[in-house]
Structure formats: structure tokens, C-alpha cells
Amino acid sequence: GGRRSGLQLYCELKRRTRIRTVDGTEEPFSGLGWARLVPSLPLQELQTSQYRTCAVVTSAGAILNSSLGMEIDSHDAVLRFNAAPTKGFERDVGTKTTIRIINSQIMARPKHHFNSSSLYQNVTLLVWDPAPYSFNLTKWFEKPDFDLFSAYVERRRLRPEQPFYILHPGFIWSLWDLIQDHTEDRIQPNPPSSGFTGLLLMMSLCGEVSVYEFIPSIRRTDLCHYYERYHDDACTLGAYHPLLYEKLLVQKINQSPPDQLKRGKRRFRTDHC
Ligand code: NCC
Image 1 (tube, helix red, strand yellow):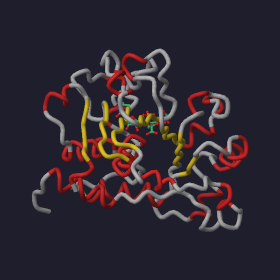
Image 2 (cartoon, helix red, strand yellow):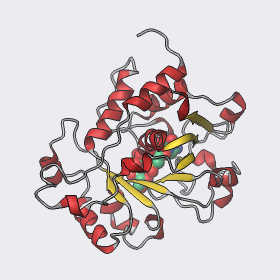
Image 3 (cartoon, helix red, strand yellow):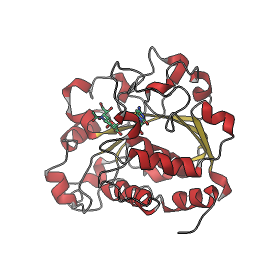
Image 4 (tube, helix red, strand yellow):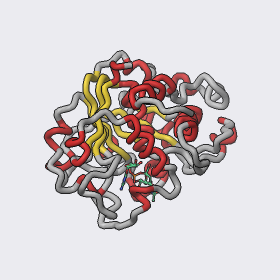
């Protein structure tokens, strides 16, 4: 394709992002009464923008020693991922969590203590599971990558007041399509990372989105997570997820002045489209 401005590309990504969750209207979920199990307020309706500014905080080790905590907390809503804590890291990552996106491992692996850990309480929770591209919801329900369904049913019973949604595989793969459509190489047929999914989601829910340490800053390191002593470059560059391509795409649509880039921040104003 021809050259296009970052803003045009950004607006296309925003236009093509259609949030979808498992809402109980399709089989097998409809037959199982999930229309009454899922939250009555659709996630898309958060879109009636209660959030003017949002922060997306990736779990990258490079956020250590950033002192970004206060800035992050100054946003109306803060999105975090998986088991990333704030306790003990407040100065660098802040204290506030509004939405948390988890992958299905968090619900299936005992080590995460999904039902008792405070990380997954008092927040809007979104979970996804890597269903195959040509998903068939019945096959997915019978054999998810990690069993999230029984734990979801249990959690809805235990905490019916918590807004907790399962992201629809069709939504996940539509984001993958977006990445592939803007990449010359053929990317691996694995779902986008939680980070990319979260960023595109917040572009729909917020007036302005700042994402921290998705594109590495000058603090770039092979430390995988800010909260763990584990070193692997693949966490930043990708192995399973098409992470490198996600990052190249986000870099193309970035709207921040250069000084912000060094700080590991990328900002997007959603009202320009
Ligand atoms: O590592 P993870 O992601 O939880 O990180 C959340 C998001 O932050 C961005 N990130 C993270 C580290 C880093 N050095 N650079 C980054 O840019 C990415 O956008 C990432 O998505 C996931 O996407 O769900 C992932 O989850 C982990 C793991 O399952 C959870 O942390 C739970 O323990 C995956 N790792 C493994 O399965 C071993 C990881 O591949 C993706």
C-alpha cells in the first residue's frame, strides 16, 4: 500500500476495533443460560466515555526506576495486565487499577490464586484465551487452551457485582488481522499480546490513552517483568505473540513528542478521527 500518515492509520485501527465479549447470545453459551450469567452492562457501553484519560501500563522490566507512578495515577482509568502488582512498586507504576486484562492461565493455574488474590478484586476484569483462528465456540468451550469457563462460572456466582467479561475470540483475531494487514511479513498465527489488546481496547473506551513501556524506553532491559527476577529478551520482542509487529504498528501511529518517547510513553488522542 501507499504511505499513509500515522493519524490516518491510527483512525483506521480505531474504526476497525469493535469490542466483543462472550454475551451468551451464541451457542453453546446461549443454551447454557450465559445471557444471565454475564454482566448485564455490556463492556462496549463503558464507551459512553466516562474516561477522559487512560493509562495502559505494560509489565516490562524497563518501567523500574521510571518514577512514573504519580503520572500514571493521574489518569481517570488505569489498565494493568495479568499478575502485575502495584504493591512495592508504587513509585514506578502507581497504585490505581481500574481494569485488568488477564489471559486464561491466570484462572487455570493454582499458583495465581485467582479467587483469593486481591489483584483480581475491585477492578473490571477481562479474560481471553487463545482459541484457534477459525474458532468454533463449541469446540473452544470443550477444549480451551486453559480452562477458564468453570472458573468463570464460579466467579460470577461468588462475585456477581464484579464486572467480569470474556473477550470474544472473534475480537482477538480481528486485532490479529489488523496487525497482519499492516505488516509485509507473514506473521505467526498466534493471538496478539494482552498489551496490544489492552491498548486497542482503551482507544475505544477513552478520550486519550497513554501507554507506558510498550515501545521500550532508554531504560530498555532484558528483565522480563518489573516484578520478577527473570531475564529474557523474548518478553519484549516476542516469541509466541507477534509482539515485534504489534510494536512496529504502534510506533507508526504514535502521536507523542520525542521527549516522551525516551520516557517510554506513547500517547494517543482519540478525538482526532
Ligand atoms: O508478560 P505479560 O504478557 O503478563 O505482560 C503483559 C503485557 O506487557 C507487555 N510487555 C511485557 C513485558 C515486556 N518485557 N515487554 C512488554 O511489552 C506485552 O504487551 C504483554 O502482553 C500476555 O500477553 O498475556 C503475557 O502473559 C504472560 C504470562 O502468561 C502472564 O504474565 C501470567 O503469568 C506470558 N508468559 C508466559 O506464558 C510464560 C507472555 O508471553 C504474554
